[in-house]
Image 1 (cartoon, rainbow, N blue to C red):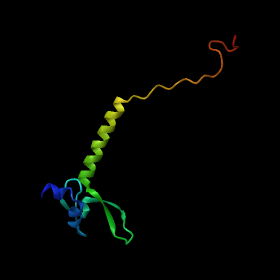
Image 2: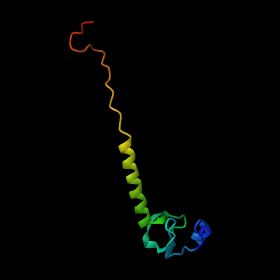
Image 3: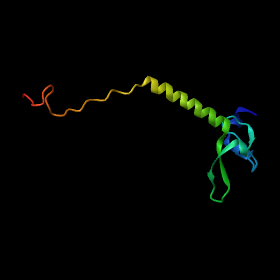
Image 4: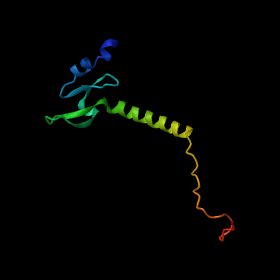
Length: 95
């Protein structure tokens, strides 16, 4: 399989059948059971995700790790105290 075929979505879609599908991420031909369901078409036929379960899980784990690293870098700012209009230290307010 040449590089031009990998990026040609018509080629990938042409290899799909009712029982098998080509993963959009790894490019392997797999049975439809290896893909998560993604709703239904208007004619009632089941629609499947573009990437297989393995590639989907790998991508989700990668995204979760990236989010953890981002959250570690960006620390939340401390909450600001809201002014109440009262003087500090005295309940009478010596203004």
